[in-house]
Image (tube, rainbow, N blue to C red; front, side, top):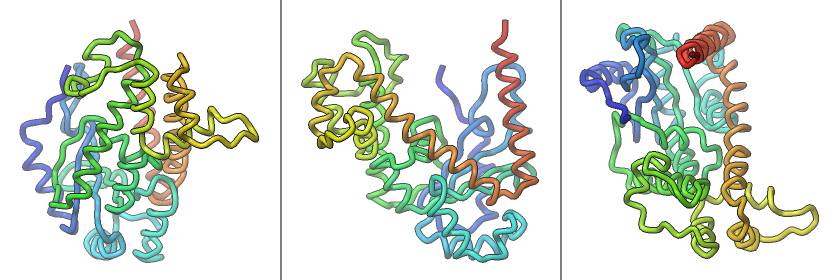
Length: 287
């Protein structure tokens, strides 16, 4: 079933964005605060609004945001915007989160990522963190005329469809591959077709696959490895392992960074809320 954005969300987003510096190349919202959730337990008013802000110059943006929203930051704020930007860019998945913020009468969590780092992740899947989030349902709130960013967003979705196609069996339904597969111009599961698709995958995923497939000491180049994989019946499984090799470490690093960017108290509260949400999901699924 397709997810539908809440009809009143546009006005709510504008009110929230008014509390932040305006220099955004992209802003999007996601999660239960944006999309109607199945089940009787869903409560829009109490659902946290998740946002990601993409900015060209994080130092300038954090400088302005510290003046407007000093209380949003953990103890790292006393070290200044350059230090915050260094933590943002060089640790975890390149995004700086401020969680559990009361803004315009509701609880929000917002992340900040530089435009250049996001484009790199969209194209090459270095972390597949924000790029991965943008492969799921999101509500675009702000998007400027950055042609490179727009092209990278399209490439990220096409790469996701290609990777999903490689992991599927020969027979599948539209539901298995999402609606995007309907417009795909190829459906060739032959070794030649799979090799073509493997060669279009993002660079970081190709490199992870090469590490998985390459025996110690052989040092084959990526193209040779992908050609062998294209003839392997376990091709989809290897692609899945490659994706896990990207996602798991970046998620762990980003979660660890959150202890410092959010502060210990907020980290404990936020983790408790996530666990409670998981528990409610499990109990709803239980017979």
